[in-house]
Length: 84
Picture (spheres, rainbow, N blue to C red):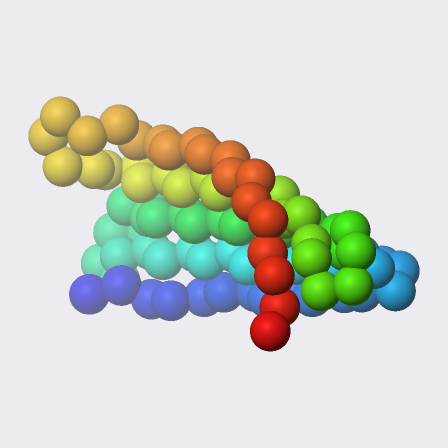
């Protein structure tokens, strides 16, 4: 069993720029040192009318992963977004 603690933050920096962060901390109830951290940061910039470019960074950490699995994972994504 794990606890689930998270924080979510979203802010419009300018009329055409949005920033958001979501972070999770999930320790095991009986062994607090066995924890999972998950983080996501996103920056969306409007390019033209309904078209935006989105930058996202993801970082996950598991203190005690399954055998053969890395403790951490980092990825980044860049994408175009069209709002209908």
